[in-house]
Image (cartoon, rainbow, N blue to C red; front, side):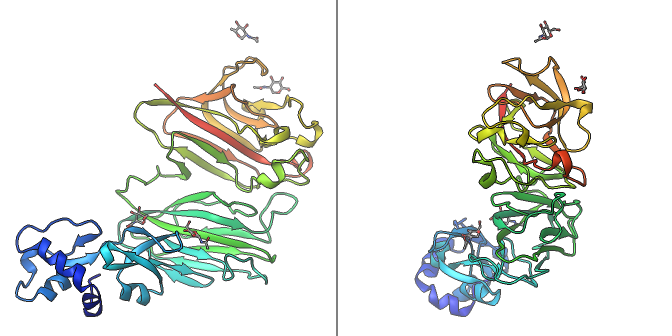
Length: 396
Ligand SMILES: *[C@@H]1O[C@H](CO)[C@@H](O)[C@H](O)[C@H]1NC(C)=O
Ligand SMILES: *[C@@H]1O[C@H](CO)[C@@H](O)[C@H](O)[C@H]1NC(C)=O
Ligand SMILES: *[C@@H]1O[C@H](CO)[C@@H](O)[C@H](O)[C@H]1NC(C)=O
Ligand SMILES: *[C@@H]1O[C@H](CO)[C@@H](O)[C@H](O)[C@H]1NC(C)=O
């Protein structure tokens, strides 16, 4: 993308300053600007042509005047690509452009935001299928990351299955479970082949009052941000919180028992934690500060325990067969000896999990927490909330 004549005049001062820097010989690397042609290809007689061929605005991220993230583009390109300009970037040569798409649209722009048409307000009519088709930016894309910056659609049915409302992603190489309910702050990675045609993100809603703002990032095959293949989620800090989809702080942060399951059925995925030099294991414990131990219930009925009492229900190993977490070669570091004397287990379920300072540790790399739920969350499973688990990487 080169700067056109209009932009050339618009940015005359900055551009002339730049020309002085670029000169005739070695091209200087200037922040926000990138080289598009070898210097030998340039006709030096016409300075405008140098700009024409030699300089383009690098598509770096920038901050818009409303303090949100945008991508730097020339003003003309921003308009042509149906973007919205807000503020400048690249020393005034570009505009900070955001790309927003609604239902039944398509994009090949990295960083596109997919929103319900009324966003930030909620839907006022059932939309049924609302799709964004994503085509690759270039032929070296191996993953797509979806950040559900804001996401609230209808809850699953009584069995935990997303029926009336769901997020569905098709066309990639990863099998992505259907997701519904409350998922603001969650993210998803999907593998795509480097020459993928397109993928389709569909938010299908039958209820009104839904809203979503999903940022769609394309990740190059050689990017340091690329997750190991098969990871639906990828956590890159040394500590953080991993929550099941539709783990709803609204129902779990009170002392009131949840009135229906929020755990989703039919999930099977890996939440991976990035390996880092100097760290040899990861410890997991349930998120503290959540009342009545509603931070973990994958099987069994948490309402049978009075708020504030110690829930005995941590279940391990082969006794977990329907809904459970897999922590490969997990070692129970049981400082209070509340649990039975099992030193290692792969599967964890029930209505309890290690509470700090107790932890479940794993040294198996790549670090991963697998999440498995079956097709139905009724009966004794009828009030499961899923999980909110804190992880922390341990130095070697
Ligand atoms: C939508 O999400 C993007 C990316 O996270 C954020 O920059 C933007 O502010 C959000 N839009 C609104 C209207 O909140
Ligand atoms: C897409 O944008 C993100 C965030 O700005 C960046 O890290 C990534 O490298 C970009 N992807 C490509 C293929 O340029
Ligand atoms: C499975 O549950 C049974 C009955 O509660 C118990 O006796 C057994 O020790 C459990 N096995 C494991 C591996 O936890
Ligand atoms: C756990 O097992 C170890 C070794 O077998 C034993 O010394 C210890 O007393 C046991 N602890 C409990 C609480 O049973």
